[in-house]
Amino acid sequence: MKIAISSAGRKADSPMDARFGRAGYFQIFDTDTGEYEVVDNTTGRDAMQGAGVQAGELVASRGVSTLITGHCGPKAFEVLRAAGVKVVLCGGGTVEMAIGKFINGDLKEIAGPDVNSHWG
Amino acid sequence: MRIAFASGKGGTGKTTVAVNLAVSAVRVGLGTAYVDCDVEEPNGHIYLEPEKDLSLPVAVEVPEIDESLCTVCGECGRICEFNAIAVLGDRVMVFPELCHGCGGCFLVCPVDAMKRSGRLVGRVETGVSKIAPCGEDRTAPGGEGEISFVQGILKVKEAMPLPVIREVKKHIPDRDIVIIDCPPGNSCPMVESVRGADRVILVTEPTPFGLNDLEIALKTVREMDIPVDIIMNRCDPDAELPAGAFDDGGARVIARIPESREIAEINSRGGLASLESPEFARIIDKILEKILRAAREARR
Image (cartoon, rainbow over all chains, first blue to last red; front, side, top):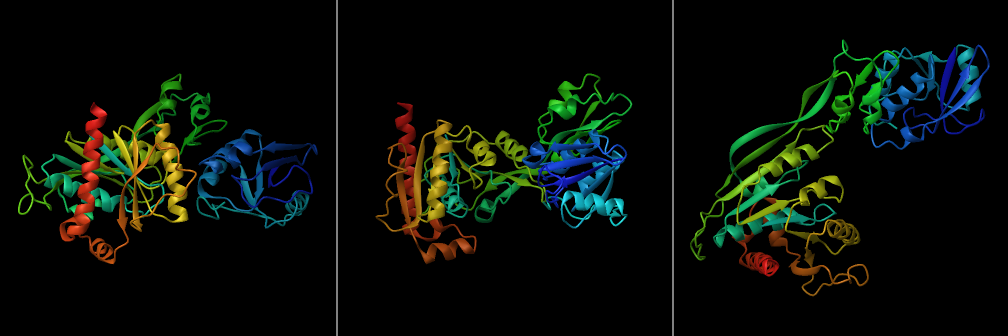
């Protein structure tokens, strides 16, 4: 299973980015194979609008089944839901801490957006 | 002749000068139109009190996907600059509120799966203002005493004024003088409002914000190759623009409007200062004279 984490940096000990659409990077971790990939989100971060839509499309295109982020707005959520990507929220910490919490079952899936548009 | 009033910074007095100039123009007998392109907050109507005769909806053409035809090839998503289309593995999603109506997706879809649909974004209204009839102390050769009025109104919560501004411009009537009240700022809405004007008048105030934005507005208008003049509002009678940024001789200060509590009070209750204050009327009349003289010189 592939999980994506919104991140401010490229490393496992980089802090998470609480924003989804305007996060700097997505770190994608495959829990089955241990494979690991960093996806640059510069185009989404600097988009004049629709950053969440763009990021949702990007994450879905990588075959991700769960997204770990700080917050998720309505348009991003709509795209992720349509693509079958579950969204779980994590309050902060580093990327590897977030992965650890997720594997331990400490993070909760959300059933809808938790913030309004343009939150980030 | 189209004269656009812009400023950069908001609240410098664009509308005050524009509506009073319309009054001044109609009272000397010019066929006059006032056009409010500040569609996010049009307020010229407060002063001119037009009788409206037309109200038309403005819609943006947005795509709707015909899923029976769509092959999810992704062409529409690639051409969309505004992230209004998300292409997922098995379907395409459209976010109409992000669409700018450029029409690119209709052109690139190879299977004609993009259907044209409309989204209401605002209104254009036209009318006539009879608030400043000719006569009494002034002569009005040929004037009818009516100001033709056009305004655009952007729907609340909409973020894109350009389609409404473009529609407003289509309704500009042919008059001796057309006064275009532009939105503040120096980005697309200002540029679209100014485009096609014969002359731009930048209304500024001698504050750091006012002058900073004036400099940006000047650069913008020059890039568009339109002659430009400056009016300094709420300033000392001998105020000058700071040396440096404005020294290249291209734009001149054609009027200085003094700070005045009387004018502020008239404005604050929606009155037309040039009908109530002879002193203010003289300032506005002089601005009109300079505009007309510049137009005559430009024709030569």
